[in-house]
Length: 103
Image (cartoon, rainbow, N blue to C red; front, side, top):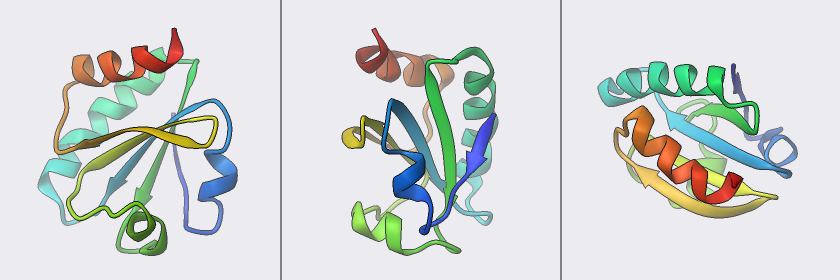
């Protein structure tokens, strides 16, 4: 399951373990393609927390990461950003990125 987060609770929700955050917007076509891929991946990965943030409703967090294009996915490990992925990515590409931090 992918949990929606806001500027208010983002830090608390992503401070421990491996977390993939999907930064998206309702008007973004590639974001609408990316979301089902992340949903599917979340069903098979208990070792990773999956969250998503609407950049229009929550501008502070994406701005703090310098996000200029969406979809952008950030992987955090124990509260530290370890990887940033910009644009659409396949399930396999996301699995490969996550494997570096969950071994």
